[in-house]
Amino acid sequence: FEGRRDNLWKYKEFLPVDADKKVSLDEGGTPFVPCPTLGEELGIDLYVKVEGSNPTGSFKDRGMTLGMTKAMELGVDTVGCASTGNTSASLSAYAARAGKRCIVFLPSGKVALGKLAQAMFHGAEVVSIDGNFDEALKAMTQLAEEKYLYLLNSINPYRLEGQKTIGYEVVDHLGWESPDRIVLPVGNAGNISAIWKGVSEFHEAGFIDDLPMMTGIQAEGACPIVNAFNQHTMKMTPVENPETVATAIRIGAPVSSIKALHAIYDSNGFAQTVSDDEILAAQLELARKEGVGVEPASAASIAGVKRLVNEGEIDKGEKVVCIVTGHLLKDPNTAINACTKPKEVSADLNKIKELLLNK
Ligand code: F0G
Image 1 (cartoon, helix red, strand yellow):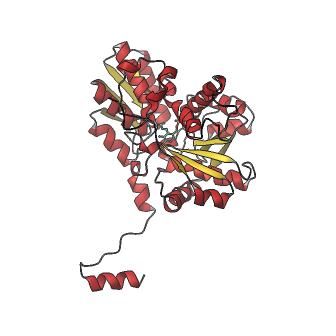
Image 2 (cartoon, rainbow, N blue to C red):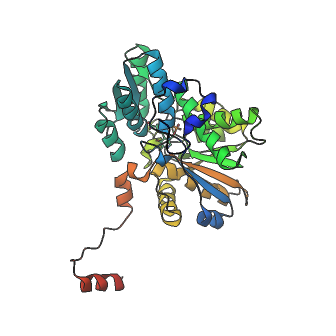
Image 3 (tube, rainbow, N blue to C red):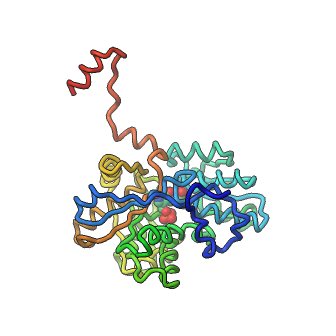
């Protein structure tokens, strides 16, 4: 079927699978939303690409439609991934659609509620690993190497081929122009590599004249890419016990670190950390000043932009696109904890008026 508007299959000539046999839920073609209030405060031209509007609520669906289409082509019967949550939510939906057995490994106790609900509800076999994401991925990769299943983590190149369409869409939205900068959260480091591949392909094809500075943001407690960047090296040293409120990017040994560092260095980009407090403040600000609800990891991009503007790394007037990677409702607990409880009142109009007037 065709989608209600352009989806990522608009670019099928650039995608290395047979689009006529796609396993699709109408992914991509997500909103591109200007942020005039925050932009004005920061003195920049700010936009967000709202990836939470994908079918399962994160950018992972772009990679999964390609990955699952390839899995069908290969005729595998079982697919699997390790995940901080969103990859498992997406894979389980696409596996359901394709009629494949799906096994997901999740770090015990560290997956946001919405993501866990999705993986279980779509019928994946969910295994809670007593360890962090890096350990879960190692075990899952070994299973794949022993041919128990087809691995659909972002080390799978078809995942990145799907996610590169974020880069295509950003320049498409801007009228075939590159923004000055693309800013996004970095966890396992696939997405920044994929988006760089996307914009580079359109640059090589002559569709755009310039390229964006790829700017990766990590949480202070899980920042191996930023550490490597600060040491001007390609060699990433794993962070042993990664920790952050942004559980999506709670990753100490990103598998695509080399590709990500290439994207950052080759684009004259940047890498920076933000604290958990900055992440939560930015999440609330984006929701209240622009009406865009995103999960904590996604808000790291906004927190990063604020920091880089203050540090003078981002120039006034720059055109900056933040990739907000996942929906607010992915992590309802964190959202509720940031708010005060609703006031309670009986359904009596006078009491209600009293309450609203005495605030
Ligand atoms: N933002 C969100 C909401 C994510 O879920 C992830 C990764 C990232 C950013 C980072 O992207 O890994 O390509 O650098 N989530 C993975 C998962 C690890 O398992 O869902 P990356």
